[in-house]
Amino acid sequence: MKILFLNTHEDFGGAEEYINQTAEELESRGHEIEKISLIGKKSDINFSQKFPRRYLQRFFASIKVRKMRQKIKAFDPDVIHVHNIHYGEIPILRLLKNTSTPVVKTFHDYTFFCECEWGVHGKKLCEGKPEKCLRDGEISPIHYLFRKPLHRLRTYMLTKSFEKALAPSKDLTKLANKWVGTKTLHNFVDLEKYGKNSEIKKKGLLYFGRIADEKGIDDLLHAYSKIENPPQLKIAGKGDETKYRQMAEDLGIKEKVKFKGFIKEEEIPKLFQGAKAVVMPSKWRENSPLTLLEVMASGTPVIAPEIGGFPDYIENEKNSYLFDFRDIESLETTLKQVISEESSELDSISTKARDTAEKYGLNDHTSKLEEIYESVKG
Image 1: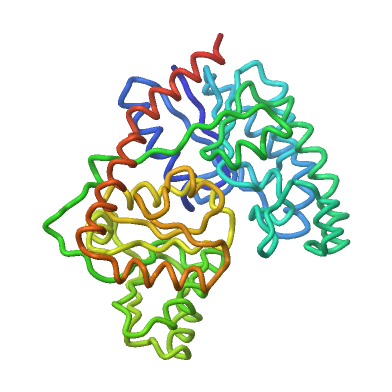
Image 2 (image 1 turned 60 degrees about the horizontal axis):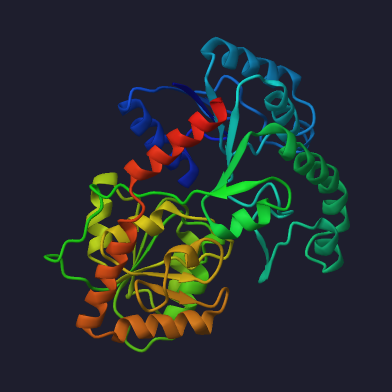
């Protein structure tokens, strides 16, 4: 089967990791894969990322779409699998609507349905209703006027452009189903790459991910700073650490917090295995982060907010821990609980975390994808 993947970025985050791993597995099964990126060093399409062109090309992008049409025609796929399309939504959706090739869409985040694109407004969950966001003061009138036509058009086009829509969490499936029939297909983990290693002593806490505001690192530092004599907290990942280094110093925890920066891929499993718990204190509505399953597959509990896709995998205090979303006191309480946990209890939770991850292997996930592709081919 010839399968074309369409996505915004070549390499950015979880969606791109998902594409690369599934593409590799599909190729190993004899399928032919082609990828089209909307922006990136290797992309010959390259949508503008600057306002106002970024906004205008969401409605008008004839040259970009012509290039896409030519690339699709040259590859002649049996199935087009669309992932993130954060640029040129309306022209691209129109192109997909008019193609004779069956199209599968995976929603990796809440961008199509939420006006601020994060799935939350402060501490409120987005309901996909711009008027309510405006009335509640969560978006400005200017934002509303600019975004309303885009929101209406693209949600209408969603119902016309795909044969099958997928989402990796029950939460996003529920929201997406207001516009287009969507099925939950949970993400996967490479069970061979990530495994529980009982020989590695678990100590300290770990944050692993992009160093960015929406990831909630500031909330983590504030909660951690309230703990008396805490174990070391490691912060690892790509991004500008400057603000958070200064915050750690201001909070008096500079000596307790270790910034490790970028971690090589081959070193990540050992990093996960050596932590007492990995904290994912996101401020936005995480859909179904791959890191969550990678950590659990490593036999390490996760500490995460009870929002988005986290509750799909986490049974609180059984295989990991949940705290109240955007609640620093709740996060502090959970951190203290994990730190003081008896080793036997923590080991039990770690084992159950691994058991949970084993339900979401790459092999089974890819087989389900193949079934979906065959079903839309007719």
